[in-house]
Length: 491
Image 1 (tube, rainbow, N blue to C red):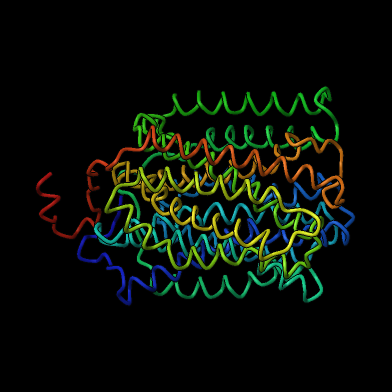
Image 2 (cartoon, rainbow, N blue to C red):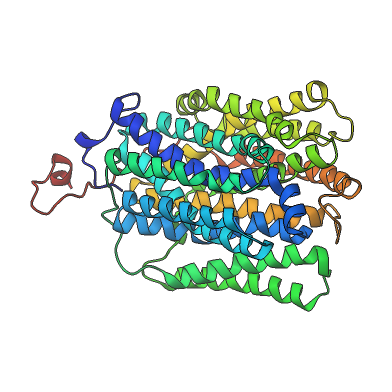
C-alpha cells in the first residue's frame, strides 16, 4: 500500500501523529461540512435566488454528484502519483470553488460552482483516509481511523450548527466563503507535516472509461429522479435520463471487467466483509442523507425554529461523536465489528421514528433532544467500526481503492436519497419551503430512513464477521538506491 517504511510511520497520540490527524481531519472535514452546511441555508437561498424545489435539490446534489462520480478517480490518482500531492491539489481546488459559490448570482451559477466543489472533494477525501492508513503503525490504525471518523463526523454534524450561525449573520454566502481560510490552514499543515505515500502496485493508465461511464450512470439516475417530481414518470426527459443512468452503470461494469487497470477491481467484492461493509454503508448513508437534508428544513419551515436554533438542535450529535467515536473504534477492534455495526443502525432506526413526530409546535427538550441524542449514540456505535471494516477487510495493497469505494458508496447513497426521498414520500411538484407540503413528506421520509437503518443493522449481522482476517501487508516501496528491508528480502 505505502511507500512509508515501518520505521517512518507515526504513532497515535504523538506529536507527528497529531499533525497528520489535524491535516486529514480538517481537510476531509471541509468536504463533510459542505455536504450538510448548505442544508440549513436552503430556505434563504431559495428566497434570495428564487430557486424551485428542483433547484434546491440540485444545490445539494450538484456537489454530491461530482464528488461521488470522481472519488474513485481521486483514490486511484493518489495511489499512483502520491496521496499527499493529490490531497493538496484537492484542498486548493475546493477552496477556489468555494469562493465561486460565495459569489454566485443565480441558482445556475451556484449549482455549477457546487459541481466544481465536488471535484475538489473527490480529490481530497479518499486521500485523507488513505494517508491515515499509510502513515500510522498497524496497531494504531483503528484508533486513528476512529478519531478521524469521529472528528470528521463532527464536521458533518457541525454543518447545520455552523450554517445556522453564519446564516444568522445575514447572508448564506458566508457558509462557502469560510472555507477559504480553513483550506489555507490545511495546506500549510499538510505541506509541512504529512508524509508522502503511494501504492507500489499502482501502475498503468488511468481508467478513463470507468470514470466516464460511472459518472453517466450516477448523473442519469440522479437527474431522472430529481426531474420526476416536476415532470412525472411518463416524461420523455425522465425516461431518457433513467435509461441513460442504467446503461451507464451497465457500461461501467463491462468496462471494469475488460480493462487491464480498472478503476474498480471487481474481484475485491468477493470479500464478504468488504461487500457487506459497503452494502451497510449504502443503506446507512442513504438514511443519513435524508436526515441531514430534511430535518433542518422541517425544523425551520414546519416547527418554526430559527436557522441558528435548527442548527443547534443537532449539536448533541456533534458532542457525542467527539466523545465516543475514538473509543468506539477501539472497542470495535477489541470485540469485533459485528456487534456495534448491528446495534448502531438499529439504535438510529428507533431515533428516526422519534424524529418523524417532529411537527408544528414541537418543543426542543421533549420532542427533539431525545431523538437527536439517540441518533448520535447510534452513529457513534456504527461509524468507526464500519470505516475500519471497509478498509481493514482488504490487503494493504488496496487501501486507496478501499477508501475510494467506501466514500463513493456513501456519497452516492446520500445523492440518491436526496433525489428519491421527496419523490417516494409523495412531494410531486410541491414546494419544500411550504410547511403544509413539507410536513407529510418529512414524516414519511423519516419512516423510510428508519427502515433503511434497520435493514443496515440486519445486513451487518448477516455479512460482517465477528473478527476480520489478518491482512497481508503491502511491500514497502522506496528509492531504487536504498537497501532492501528484511521484509522485502523475505519476499
